[in-house]
Length: 276
Length: 276
Image (cartoon, rainbow over all chains, first blue to last red; front, side, top):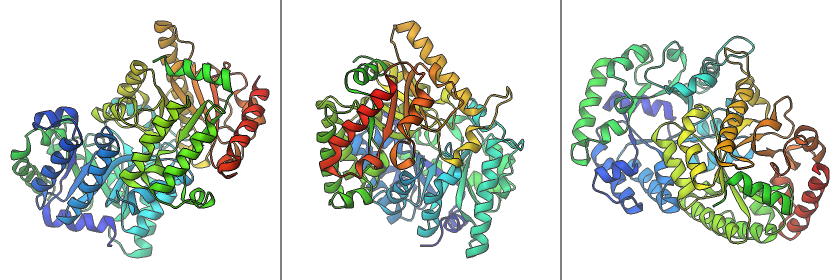
């Protein structure tokens, strides 16, 4: 399989810069007229895939909403991943996994090689990016991506993310530099255009050298969280073409299944025009 | 259900201070003569529960090793949680979950109310403890625990965890103080002895005010990771009786199924004597 970063660049170039979160919360299942159980979850997922196939580059199932339904919900996630792949949608499993030692290798098995194997997974770095090494190596080996949470837009995240190390650099800036270094090494070694390690940076976050990350930037916050297309352009317009994935979930999904395709296409076109 | 913290105090007082990690890695499944699939995972889990029932206070399944086997693995986890409860073992699901907004509420549903509902779950705080509010509230409402990763023993964790905020306090110390404040408020409001918010602190970590946390301290590192009973006493001997859960996984599980009960009992007795 071609490396994840280059597959994103290609898909965004062909279709447009938008990632749609698949967040089947109890409230959205109800709004879509579906039961809050695994059958509702399955119908919701299938309708999202049908509506979004060919219209967006990437879908991002939020794993928590599948875990709510236990093993039956996780079986729906397995099917969603394979259904999405069969219609050419890239999948970022929004799992926010992260741990140390052999556990990290187990997560790599689960999300890059096992039944959930998606094109990429999100990761949380509290134990240090270096501790996630088995996941970064496995991502590169399998042509998949590890998209690391770096800078979130929620106010409670500022305390940790803006703390500074002994060198005066903030946690989020240091992490972004570490990701950039890994992507630079990968690009030098393999010739990929866009490295396998991505970063999650909230749409309204500023002051970070996002244009140097050398991997995919997943940018949540459009819609329900209040960010606009203008915010994306202002914060991420200088990043390499095709590497930015603005993401929306509730804001778009709340239009309901029948309006989803059209609403996604309009937002995608707005983003494509603004980022062009 | 009685609050999680008080249930831990009671179980540790009655049985002894030990948490055994259930980590069915590919290597351990092989060492136990079991296949690396959901049937092997199921046999491994059942043998652990049988061996540990009545001998230890708490078991800690590492969720990554169940995810490796997809939805079928997660079904084994559902059964493990209910089997453990039926023989009186407390369960901390080592899931390291954490996110913002409605996702956090979904994790609370999954791990405190849904089919995976364990006595407690581990959480990762990169987005800020405040962002996990729906999980802390749900833990208190359901008599369950949220055990937050604070200070890990891996060297890659030092960068983030020892960064300092504008007040000069490290990330890990600030987090511990925030947890202590929440537990103090809960104790004042409800009269519990031990609050619902716990902390994960590696066995070899020092210099943190662990004795003031007012909740359960989950302390990994015994055995394969190199920490000793002496390390536990040195670092955590001043914590309130029954609130410390030293944890071991591989080091103990590698004795195999037939020796597990005896080895767990010996380690538990060593810890009980040392912490008395």
